[in-house]
Length: 130
Image (cartoon, rainbow, N blue to C red; front, side):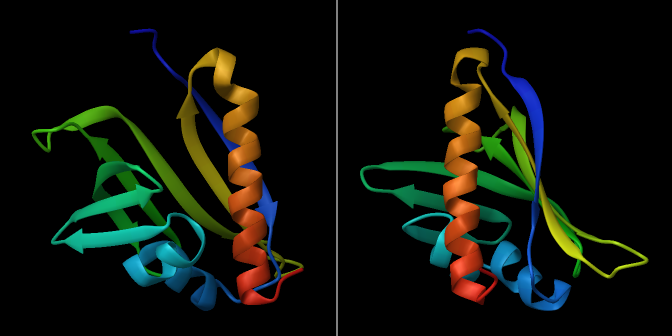
């Protein structure tokens, strides 16, 4: 299998970090914009879209700041890939943005970034940051 490449995208979001954190760290929050359905059992989250599902482990979180989900295989063992959602606040302007760190195969990079843009657009509509 060809290894995936890491990429980062930053999205300005007009929201308080506390509100935004609820949407990136809880199953109910993630279900509103990230996946059709999100279940969690302990540290494991199952993300469902139409007819596919992926399982990830909540690898780390820092309250009000960031969450990192590590994708796991069928036997719930960590893979090399993860996605991270990091809330950034500009010290001077107090502008809030969401940094997405993810992985994609080289030929799917544009498509993967577009998918995030669509999902973050849904998130912005949800929290009234349009």
